[in-house]
Length: 206
Image (cartoon, rainbow, N blue to C red; front, side, top):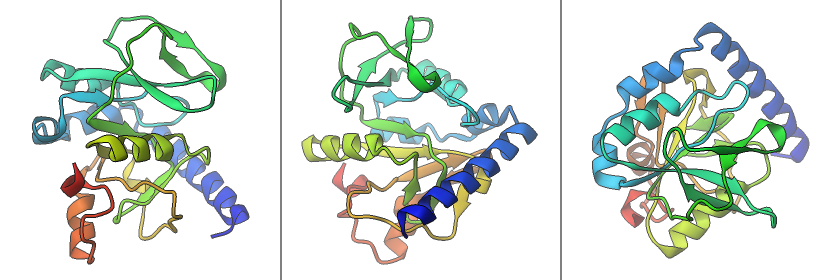
């Protein structure tokens, strides 16, 4: 897929997401109610969420649910060098207003390495390929954590954001699971049935 093709797909998927969000602004609550806590039991305890911007499905109800189940929460922070770190955060703690509508933990917040990462997206497929915003922040961060240890990547989105197939590039880091307002998409299992050997950084590498 060329850069032009990806730009057009991002525009199309952003529009679809905006329409889905307008139809169901409370989809984040529905998603949270369907999230299987067995994932936290197996891949916790440090969960990085994100602060929603625009039409992204709201992860805050899920984060509150996980905190109530003894998860330690974190949020991403873009550093001055362009890389993304993860900082411990609890609901009610102050956040810093950043460009593009982002809200991030203060620079003084402790760094951490999450074991379960909730990932925003524009689109994803059944093999865990993900279409983001094109900056590569999550790909680089997940790659680094997977080199250092274990992490389980769970994409959050609306059902309409799931596509049959997305082109993957060598630097792309796959999702292990996805959640939509309709429930779970067990990507690492689907990838195994499709012939994957689990060596791509999924749960078998966690």
